[in-house]
Every structure is written in C-alpha cells, then in structure tokens.
Image 1: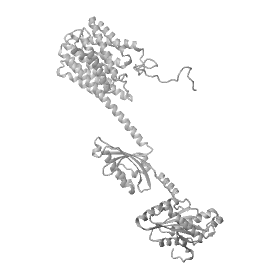
Image 2: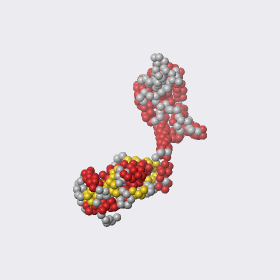
Image 3: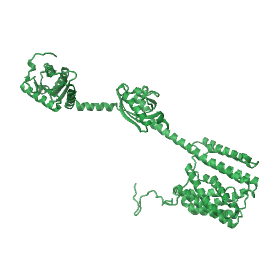
Image 4: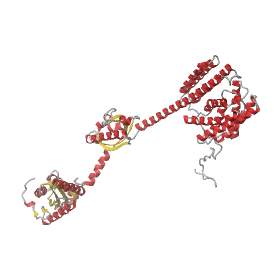
Amino acid sequence: MITAPARGGDLTRPAQRRRDGTSGGGPSNGGYGSVRGGGPRLAVTTAAVVAVLGVLMTGLVGADSLGATVWWPAAGAALALAVRRPARRWWVVGGTLVGTVVAGRLVGDDASATAVFASAQALQCGVGASVVTLLAGGAPVRLRRGRDAWGLSAGAVAGILAAAPLAQSTDASTQVLAYVPTQVLGVLLVAPLLLLPVPTPPSDARSARLAALEWFGVLATAAGISATVFLFSDPGPWSFVVVVPLLWGSARLEVGRALSALLLVAVVTTAGTVGAAGSAALLTSPQLHVLQALLSTAGAVTLVMTLVVRSRERAVVVAGRREELFRRTFDDALLGVALLRLRADGSATVARVNDRLVSMLGTGDVVAGSDWADQVADVHRDAFVDAVQGLVEGVAAGEPGHWHAELQHGDGRVWLELAMAAWPTTPDGARTGDIAAVVQVADVTQRRLVQRRLREAALHDPLTGLPNRTLLEDRLRHALDASSRSGRRVALLYCDLDDFKPVNDTGGHAAGDHVLIGVAQRLTHAVRPGDTVARLGGDEFAVVCPDLPDEAAAQAVAQRVVDAMRTPFPVAGWSFDVGISVGLAMAELGADPQRVLQQADGAMYEAKGSGKGRVRAAGVKVLDLRAQPRTGS
C-alpha cells in the first residue's frame, strides 16, 4: 500500500550533510555516524582519559610535575579523539584542558605550572586537530593508508610547535628541546592505536586462533627482550635489539596488534631507563635522549612498515579479486574469447581460450600454443598477418591497438568476426615487441549466408534464379567499361517469347512457370560461358555478350538462342511450341548502358512486329532465322 505524506510534509529522503559535518537528522560523528551523548559526554571522556594517562605516566617515571616525562601519551589520545570527531573537536580541546588540570592536581604539581601546561596541551590539541581536519577535508580520520599518517604527522607537528613556546615558560624542565620530543613520542605511540579502522576478522576460527597466537608470541618476545635489555642490564649498544620483534610484528600482524607491541616496548623500556638512571636525574641523563631516539625510530619504522605491508596486502587482495573477476568474465562470456601473444613476424600464439570459443570452433582449432594465423583461411591469412604486424608496430609507437574484421576460418566454410585489442605486457613491452591481445570472436556464418541470400534475392529472379534487371545493368556497365579498354565489342540481345500466352491460358500459371524455367535453362546453355542471361520480367529475357570481335559473332549467339527454342516444351502431358524474338544492339565505345537497352528493346519490338522467331539488329533489316538452316548447336 502507498501512503501519501501528511499535509505540509515531504517524502522521506536522505538527510543533507551540513557544513559542520552533522546532518539534519541528529548529531553526527563528523558526518559519519552518530556520537552518543554529543559534545559534553565527549569532553568528559577526553578529560578522564587525559587525566588517567597523565597520572600513569607521571607515576611510571616517578616525576613530581607533568612535564618531567619521557613521553606524554595524553597528547596522542587527545589528538586522536579530536580528529575522530572533527565536528566536535573543540569539546575535546576543552576536555584536554580540564583533564590536564586534574592530572596536575592529583600528582601535586604547582598550580601555576599546571595551568600553563594544561593551556599548552589544549592549544596543541586544537591546532593539531584543525590542521588534520583541514587536510582531511573535514572528514573523520582513520589510518588506512600512508597519506592519512602524513596528515596526522603534519597536524601533530603544527600543534606541538604552536604550544612549545607556551610550555617552556613554566620552568627549565619543559623547555622547547625537552617538550617537543616528549609530545612527538606521545602522539606517535598512542594516536595511531586510536585511529585504526575496525579490522576485518579472519574468515575462519582456525585462522583467528593462529593470528591471536602469533600476536601473543610477538608481545611476549618484545616484552622479554625489552625487560632483559633495559630492566636487568645496562642496555648499551644492545638497546636497538628491541626493534627486531617489532619488525616481525609489522610484517605479520595487523596494524593495531603491531602498534600494541610497540606500546608495550615503550612502557617496558621507559620503566627500565627510569630504574637505571633514577627519576630525579632522568631529564638530565644522556639515557633519556637515547631512549627517545630509540622509541622514535622504533615507532616510525613500525608505523610506516605496518601501513606499507598492509597496503600491499590489500593491493594483492584487490588484484586477486580483479583477476578472479576477469577469469569469470573471460570464461563465462557469451562470445568466444582468446588471449594471444603477438609478434612482429605476424604470428599470434594462443595463450588461453574460453569454453565458448572451444565449442564454437572445436578443440583441434584452438590449442594453446598454436598460431591463430594457421587457422585463418588461405584467402584471408595474409590480411590477418598484416593486421597483427600493424598492431605490434602501432603499440610500439604508442598508438591504441585495436582491430576489427570478418575473416573466413579453416576451410572457408566458417566466417568469424574478430575484435582485437592489444597492449604491451611489460613496461618495456612496446620496445621489445612483447605484445598481448585479447580477441573476441563471434560466428557470423549464418549472418553471412542470410546476407548472401538477401543479395541474391535483390539481384536475381526468384523463379528462374537468373540475374534480374539490376544485375543485368551492372554486368552491362562493367562489360562496356572493359570494352573501352580492350577495344572489343559488346552486344545486347533483348528477347521476348512468342506464343507464351496460350501456355498460361491452357495449363495455368504453374505451366507458364515451368516453361519459363525451361527457357532460362535453354538460354543459359545456348550462350557462351562468359555471357550473362537475365530475366527482365514476364516473358522477357536479355543476354549480355561481352568481348566480341564483331557483329557476326553476336549474330551467331542470336541464332543459337532462336534454335534453342525450336523444341516444344512438355508440361504435364501438354506440349507447348514457344518461340523467341530477339532484338540485337551492338554497343559503341563509351555507350551508355541505358541507351543500349533502349536500342535492343526497340529492335526486339521491330523483330516481333515482322514475324515470330526473328532477330532484328538495331538499324538493319529483319533476319528470319527460323527459315534458315541450323549451322550449329
């Protein structure tokens, strides 16, 4: 049932997206889904996360102020929350300010220092999120490819540099050179974890268990190496050994699990460094810079390598899907399809064919590794070889490689329509001549037969099968053209049957048709092999006699035509004596075909008016060939 909309209402349609990323239907996650609780709840969540992370990191390093840390995870969390919901990022900025103040009060930091540091954190979050949002076009950010990581990095650096002058105004521990690496590490180690899209679970439970087992193995290995190097010994030159399990995780694990291993290594190595140097001397110890360099290197390598590996894996999956799509399209196509390898010598080696082509041509004609040119009929083989050579040369010159033709296949009884597209198989294939082509094949044999029958029907008499007037005029025109080059003569015999009306009156039209067919057969046998016998309509026929030496030769053909009608035509028990009157016209050089027809037609009427079975040459006396003895058959 269709219900009309209420008065003043409108049909339901998708809510239009507003400029701020929300829609008319309610709150939006930056234009991509709803945000439960809206801005206030997001601010509270941000404040809680920032406060907890600030207290935990300060406790981990045993510092008495918020700035005296190795890396500041709250910076990465705040930036991630802001760019995930760009339409409500200012609520996140407010939450960052409140959360940092709360963390400062909980760790007993000086009130003024806490206020300055919290303001710097809020400014850093606001500037960084705005830059990232601008680069992303206002859309929520997810780390799916390298471009997203570059945008996040640009925003983070912009925010940190904007906040550094404000942060350094507190005390020496938060000068620019100490503040910047602390914040960069916080963003690098935490923000990517919160910006990853939801991973696609493995297709089966066994794969999921194996992936989880490998993840736990990487975590255990990374934690064990980090603890061994940093907690129980002086790391020295062995500190970078912790990168090894991270590289393994980057190559094998999905992005989130690889970054979780990185975060675990950061926590363990930080705790080990603090334990070795002491919390009071940490910020002035050379080990701080070594640790920050290690974590920066490990973080950058892990993030970049993980994104690159996963991107290539997705590319492989996409390529596999495209290959499967091509295979299905290739195999299930309604047309015959073949993949060929073209060479400059004109050969076209068959690489693969689909089932439709096999059923069309048979298994023996389309064997992989055979040369398609060998299967083309002799009459068209040279044309096919020339086309292949032209395609190879054209592709090598950078031109589009397309070719379309209809060729006879095999012994010539089958006609195929071929549409071929060629391209280089390798980047330098155009130069080396390594060209591939896909050819689509349709069997057009039946269409060709129908076309030939239609042409025959248009140019031939349906009763006798002789050429009709249209084809006769064409043959006469060609004969006249040839005569103008050779100097030989052309004659036209215009024939009309005598005493044909009694045949129809006595035996009916069926008898008349039978006699007309017999007349056509006798005329065809009476003339020379190169002459054209045509039926013009009714009981009128015509004969084109090309390549004659003189008029006497034409008179001889006319005599044979008249002699061919001397024998009566037996039809269904009757015997009909039908004669023929002939008008003869000798064409002059350069004569017009219509003029020759008119002359022969006029001569035929003069011959018929003078008596039956006579020949009248245009412009001369009537010849009574029936009264003359036969001189030949």
